[in-house]
Length: 531
Image (cartoon, rainbow, N blue to C red; front, side, top):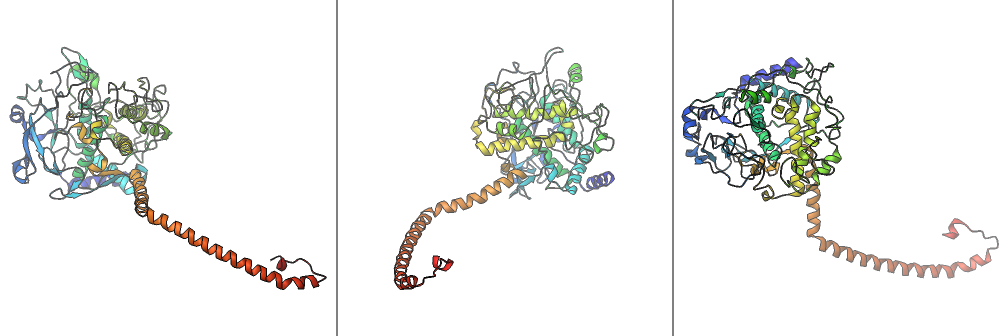
C-alpha cells in the first residue's frame, strides 16, 4: 500500500508544475522591487501588471486601517508585521470581479473557468466518510506537497532591517507544505525589541477576533494550493470530528501515524509520516539568535497523544461542549483577547470553559485541547502546522465557526472595528498574506467561498426540503382552512341524514318483529338478535 501511494505521488509530480500560494511572491523578492516598494507582478496571460490589459486588476496604493488598536502591544515601528504589508510594499495588485492572486491570475474561491464566471461549491468530508481511494490520494498529495518546491513564493529569512531596508534581500526557497508551516509561524512569532528583549504578547492569528477568519483564509489557500499542485480541481480538505473522542482515532499507521510504545514521541516507522522533518519548531532559539525561521529541517515529526498534562486538559471536547459554545451570541467581548468572557471566539479557541464561557488560562479547552492532547509538534503554536493533523483539526473548528454563522447570521458589523489586539481589527490586512485581504472579508459563510461541510450540507438539505413544503402550505393555508370547514359541514349533514334514516328503519323493524318475539316461547338471546 505504501509503495503504491508513493508511486501515485510520483506520477502526479511528473504531470504537473508545482506552484504555491502564500506570502512573498518570487517576482517581488528582488532588491529592485523591495526598494521601489511596488509588488505588482505581470500576469502572463496578457503581459501586463496585475492583468490590467484584460480587466483583471490594477496596481494601487495600499490603504491602511486607521482604527485604534488594543493595549496588548504598546509599541510602534519595531515589527515588520505592523500595518502589513507597508514595511515591504506600499503598492500591490487590487483585483476586480471574480479574479484574485498576487498578479490577479487566479479565480476567487468558489469560481472557476477561463474567465472565472462558473460558480461551484465543493464539499469537505469527514475523514472516516472518505473512500479508501480518496484517503490514499490525500496522503499522497501531502507527501507530494512536502517534496515539491514552490515555484511562485519564497520565505523571508531575515527582518527588513537585516535586509538593509531592502537592498540586501534575504529570501529562501521552500516546499509547498512547509510554506504554510512558515506562514503560521510568521504570524504567531514573538516580536524583537531593542537589545536582546522580545515581546511575547503578540499574535496576528490567535488569541483575538481574527483567529477564525485568519484560519479560514489559511485553509482555503492550502486547499487551493494542493489543487494547483496536483491538477485536481475537486480536491477538498477532510476534517476530523473529534466530538466525544476517547482517543486519537486517526493516529494510526493507516492514517497519520501510530506512536511507538516507548515514550519518545516518535511516530511508528510503518507510517509515511515517520520520515517527515519539521521546520520552524525552535522559537526560543530564534529569539536568542534574533533570527527568523529559514525553513531548514530541525528533526522528526513528534506526536504522543494522551501523554499530556491532564490537569490542563482532562478530556477532549464533547458534543455538549460544542453546543454550549454555539449558544453564545457574542462573537467577541471585553478585551477581545484570551481573557474575554462570554465570547464565542475565545470559547471555541479554548481559553474559556465551554460550559460557563468564563476565561480560565489554567485550562485548555475546545480547539486548544487537541493541540495539548496530541503532545508533540502540534503542541507548539508556532510549529503546530508541521503535523498534518493540524489541517483536519482546523477544518473541523472552521465547521463549528460555520455553524455559528448560520445559526446567528451576524452582519459584518459584528466583527470588531477597533480596539482589538494588533492585527485583529476589522480592516487590518491578514499577516503575512499577499494578495491582501482584511480580516472581515472572511467573516462570512463558507458557501460564499465555494465550500461546505458534508454534515452541514445534509442537515441543510433536509431543512430546505421541509421549508419548501411549509412555504407552499403557507401560501395556500386559506384554501386548506376553507376546505376543512366545508368538509366538516358536509360530513355533519351526511351524518345527520344517515342518523335519521337509521331511526326510521329501526322503528319499522320493531313493529314488524314484535309479535314473533312474543309468540316464541323458547326464544333465546343470540348474536343475530342482539345485532
